[in-house]
Amino acid sequence: MNEAPKCDKTPLISVIVPVYKVEKYLNRCVDSLLAQTYQNLEIILVDDGSPDRCPEICDRYAQRDERVRVIHKENGGLSDARNAGIDAATGEYLAFVDSDDYVDAGLYDALMHALLQSGDRLALCGFQKVTDEGALIKKTPMRFPARLSEDEFWYQLFFPYRDLGTVAWNKLYHKSLFEDLRFPKGAIHEDEWLVHHYVSRAGQVSVVNECLYFYVVRGGSITAQPLSPRSLSILEAFSQRLAYFAEKGKARAVTLGMRNYARYVVFFLDDWRGRKELTKEKSKVRTDFLLEIARYLGFAGKADRAYWFAALNCPMLLRRVIRLKEKRARKRAQST
Image 1 (cartoon, rainbow, N blue to C red):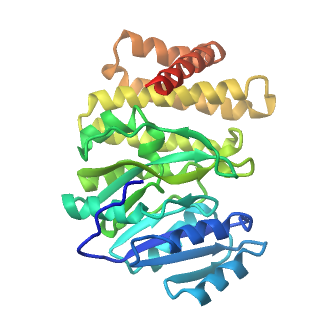
Image 2: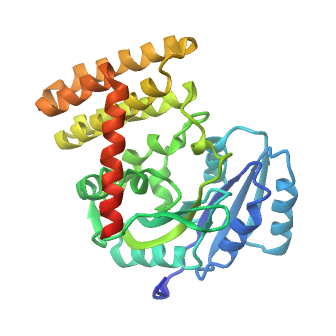
């Protein structure tokens, strides 16, 4: 990356790293944090009852560098570990890093510089999906304005590039954004629940147009697992976000949010096709989506209504269409 201008002020950043069964990756992760050009960090390693050598590795780092703090706790899952880190943090700013990932040395210099320049309370950057060995899998082009209003965030960044907007770990937050706000314990896709809360509170979002976070795609990670009944929590998160959009009168956001909900309805129903043991869960997906359709039918045009009902009635066919459109979009992105 191009070297970010050094910050005149150096507020303390609390970087929260949940740790569970990642002894193969943990050293690379923590070393990348200790190598930050922005030095005023406290690195909170939350050992979430990891059964491998992770607790020992965490303690060794704490002995080596006074910026590293370790919390040992019983296993409670990713959200619970993040929440424990938030509660223990003493920094003016918060950041999250997954312990199987790693970051560019200039990540927090760049994000903090953006916030101090703009006066905003939330900043984000791009990320690269990489293999265990660091080979590039995917990199989203970053061509956004340096600042986005809340509505610009939804329409220019979040809906076109949902992964950039949703994930917790490519961002730097003023701690006030998390006042009375915590990740839902036990939920998969926990990031989905909070984004509309902290973006609404922030009002403006600063953007660093560089991919400074390295997201490691590995087979054993939570997000690499197939959809399971536990994954249904993502639909509850979508429902809450739709209610927020409707309450704020963001009609376009409601229709875009419903398209996204419908997309996941397609995934669930197609993935679970023929699985009799999941009859109850499939019925819940259909019933809940029909309730959402009833709530937001007044926001929809003919095309949206057709899409929503197609998700319920022919998910296998619609999934083929979705895959084809995504394949074409990837080709366009690669050619630009």
